[in-house]
Length: 228
Image (cartoon, rainbow, N blue to C red; front, side):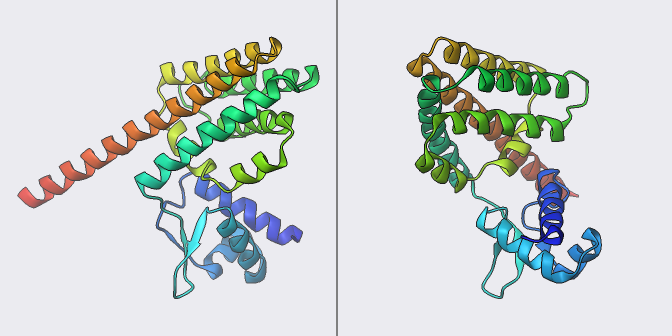
């Protein structure tokens, strides 16, 4: 991928993660090219990459949109992530080195810093959270696991879930990372797997609560409009 294409990819992906390009939004190459400061060809290449990563989708008329998943798809994705990342944590517990554990501690501190102020720094949270989970996956030493997890919905869902966390949920997420580090230091694969699975399942319920609250708000808005 060229530098221009990589720049366009990072820009569009960042806009999606930040929620500035919402699910269902149509993506027009010319507008994106102007926003990125590149030609349409790099944008086209970037969109193809984002399509393979399921950030965007193309319809039958070849128009491109920010992907929008059903609740059932997301529920299944969380369930699969819990199983696969749990297995990755189990494998990592007997393979991870001291240098990787130190990196995990550094990124978890980054998450603390990103969540310590009144306003959550979503970008920093995502960066450190992604790095934390990537280190665990790398320590697992399984190409099969890496390939399976790469095909699942992740970052856009993590971003939207993070915005729903209150202070208590953020502290819980950090504490779960701390407990995973304890399991790694003890070289306990069962403990590590259980912590990771619980970590992913709790994230699902945070997302589920936010999703249902959003539906309730939309229904209330429709009822109010109908009565006016």
